[in-house]
Image 1: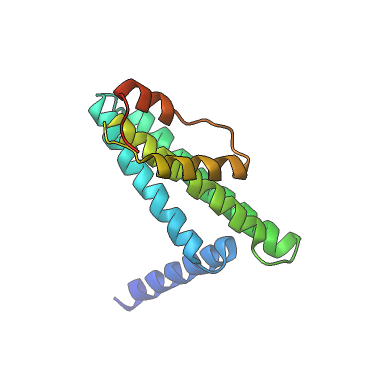
Image 2 (image 1 turned 90 degrees about the horizontal axis):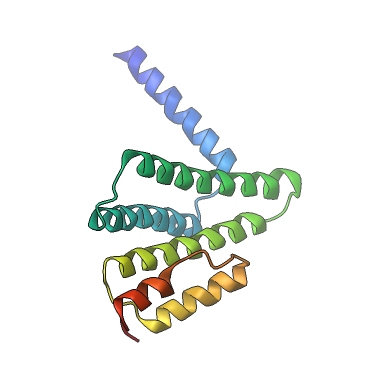
Length: 152
């Protein structure tokens, strides 16, 4: 039992060192990003189920995309800390970009499920998306138009 405990301790330590190197401190932005990624996956699964389009291939592709978001955040952290030797400016910008995109995707999924979307929320998220430099890749307005006027 002692050997097993040592192996588990070593694995936990190695994982902690690796995560610390890749992400640095776990900030409120990181918590927000993790929450948005998880909520987007869940709402995306619900929207796909409602349309009867759930497939393992699409789920795997979605999980890979979520993993790549975390990879890009890690790359940004490594650039901040080990290349430019500055505060986590690039990492924060990358996290904010993906937080906004994930939030828009959650709203899009809610619209696909027929939930009325408050216009003010939609306006704020679209303004944030425009400021972040992201192209309008969401279909929120199309979904709302298809379902009729879903709220203000």
